[in-house]
Length: 189
Image (cartoon, rainbow, N blue to C red; front, top):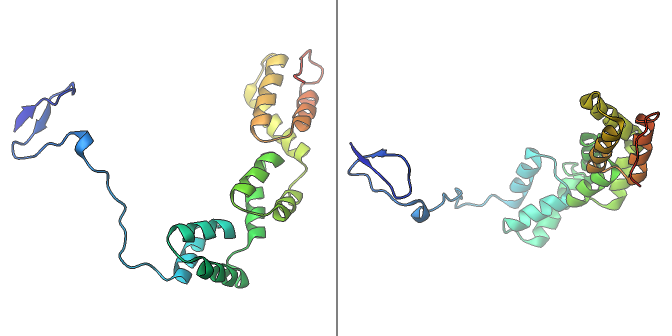
């Protein structure tokens, strides 16, 4: 075995004399394995829905990106809705429950990103506890993690934490004032 030094490499790397060496720039990235046979649309749709819960819009985009025809996609989606394999309301409720420690703005943004209508947004958020209760719980947890810090610093950290989790400004202000009450902390307006 012969030790060879590559340009720019700080170490000696053992290389067999018969082994060709290509610079990194000349190497081709690995391609995804693609099967020559495409699954029928119905089978592919059921497989995608079985992998994880999807909204109708997510499924529509995914199937269109794989090259299926739009009319056939619409027929398949309506069939999946008929047999209750695709339900945007259940999807919205599941997203709401998963992000129950976040604010309404964050949850609405997630649902909008998944292509779920405003009607389902409202219904999913109505099923959750009040935003103020969720914000109080998240702030109390953060306050325990902060330990004993100055009230002004605690207020600022709580404000940043809650705002970053998608709670409205009015809700954040109420929660911070309530939890850091009795201290001489200045609050941002």
